[in-house]
Image 1: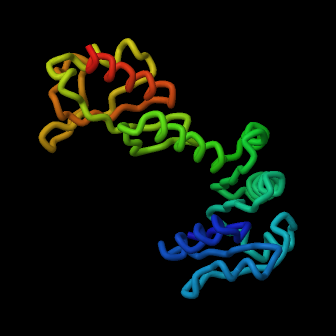
Image 2: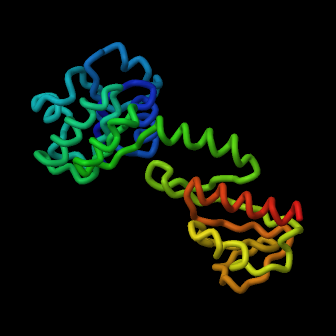
Length: 220
């Protein structure tokens, strides 16, 4: 597949290299030639010096044939404009925007662009690790609004129904229950056993409520 990465900072260089190592054709665009030094020596994609929002540069990068474009410069406004041009005028099938300033995220998303907010996601992950160190996040959707967590069932909850644990929380949905190495799609009536591994889909508020619920019974 053919991909264009606009911005060769740390994220752009890492992304371009990962795509290249996966066997794709990659063109990296940046206004500063020196930034291409961030690319590993064995990178064999193309590099193109110039402003990513100009028609000439985008077309030289192959935007008309591109399967995807990532705008990952350190400017939210530039990323938004480049992505909008790629999607609306060149009809690139997949366009992804990196967002730095959380205050501008809603503006970018208003254009209907797929957005990755490293600042918001990173802050949320640090908060979760500080507040809920016993819970392990295994999958994050979007920018972390919904995540799947791996929760170990303590002895205090052994013998209790799954519904007894989750139904009062409202924001927690069971994904899988693993017992003795075998996983299943759990019913709310299943009886939990000590050491079960429960995967739940929830929000940051939901995992906090689940942690508190588990702890409350353990203290009782």
